[in-house]
Length: 464
Image (cartoon, rainbow, N blue to C red; front, side):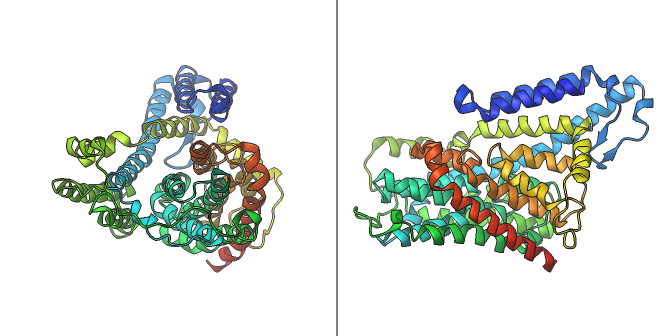
């Protein structure tokens, strides 16, 4: 039965990675393989020799001696445990997505465009990569990429020039998301799973992530694509559509930044702080919506949208529910493999078979090479299930350097291929970037950033 479950997972995973070829949204294979995996576990519960208790992160003692009813009860408890942990992540993401959509409802991100007042290509490159690095640490790398490419499309009209900027934005956004507990789904998973804390995450990964962004940007600034000035009139200041644009931008970003602080003070799960932040932002949004919007455009559709919709209801209708369902499917499918002990056995094999690197510095008992390979693997396949699997594979305590290395490696390794990260996939869709163009022009820059950041991490982990 275990072999069949693994086969279902592999087939489902192929469906996810080949979504563009099959033209099937990745949430479909994720949900199907999750449901089938748990159904097979339920039907074959008496055939499994071991069971992994996720709450205690250890194998259940004397599991073969348990009766059918006891095994079913244990399976139900395990399923409920994983659903609870997954729900924490999903509710957190729902809150963050809604705040970002409320900011966009008031056209808050137009405020960022007004900061760009230069035509020099290299300066614009640095502005966008720094913005991507900083924004992704607050509103997550996916959203930061969408926002910045949308702004880029209003500043750079030549697509052949714009895709170069988009490539560097992907690298910078993924780097910025790695050192923040709210900057990337995988880092958020580690944070909510109590594997990393905010202060240690910053201490371990801020410098490696910065190097991962700065070095590729520095090299790219000398490339022909970023020489000279833009032909069009870039950097023109435009008046935001709403007079509350700037207020909602700073309020929304501040509310999201408040969440880790709330967790450190109260020790409550992060989704509680996110719901508080959402509630505060929603109060201001509803209040501001009663005021008359100052619109530069006379477009009746825009006026009707603001008149007919509550900001909160409108924003909730705009969030990406397919992404939420995808995370539900993939996380619960990985939980199935964890529960039957597959991931535990795989982790034990890795520890024994992969040679150690930097043993005198590494205190986790897991080879650096394993984590580096995980980073390289995240460029080919989605980093969410890879990190979800690592949560079930390794039992190191909170803030062990292993977890921070996984956060960096999985977060930044995806930049090496355009399909390796959510930021890359969305940029690919928005700008119709060719896979092989990115591979030839941008991938080597991402690889340099990844390796340089890894080398810096080997230094920063000695400081703790």
